[in-house]
Length: 244
Image (cartoon, rainbow, N blue to C red; front, side, top):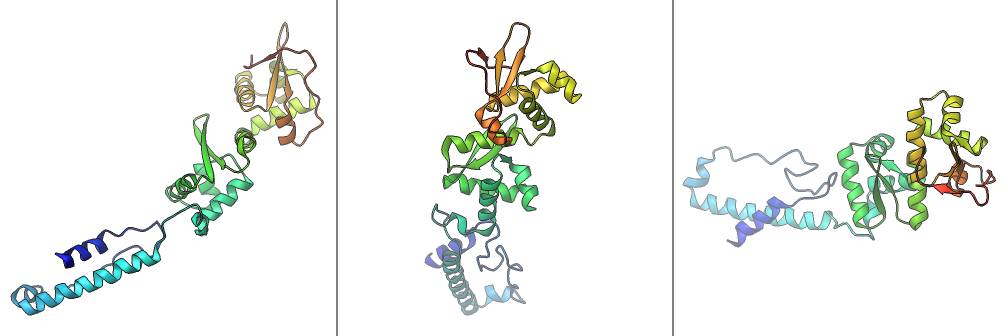
């Protein structure tokens, strides 16, 4: 029974994707070793059968020890020792707000592989994900709420139309929706969509007027676009939470 238990332990050993455990037939191997030339001999010869079973037990124990020595449990302390995972973490520090497919494309990895490593980074509380307009985008935990805000803003501005809208408001503070749509030759509905997203992510502020709503950069919007001296919202203006 002890022998069978050892063989069983070796059989169920599982490592992280991409980890070579050193176990025959496992990840990184060419498959199991060859079977005996005549399987009937194992049954008909008791001595051979016991010897084969004992040999399998020794091999199984060796495989289990190799697995325990070669595959690490992932902790916050060692999570970045994995080259692929460290690459994902560095990418998110450089470009916060990327979604799964964008990360995979940037690093030429499969989405399955990226998802595995993102979960390990989330478990270690180094990375967090946030749903934004149907996508889950990821950003580093370090930096707190400021990091989250910048990540959400960066995710929105990866759209060319959104970037153009923000740049126009930077050069024409107080512009209204129709003015922006005409200037950019973009459908009014498209402009409205992007204005709402930029209000939601604190890139723009909306000022309610009698006949229209006007838009100004927030401090975050001005910093993201590289115009920290952009015109501020007029004093005493009434702000709104949604685009017209």
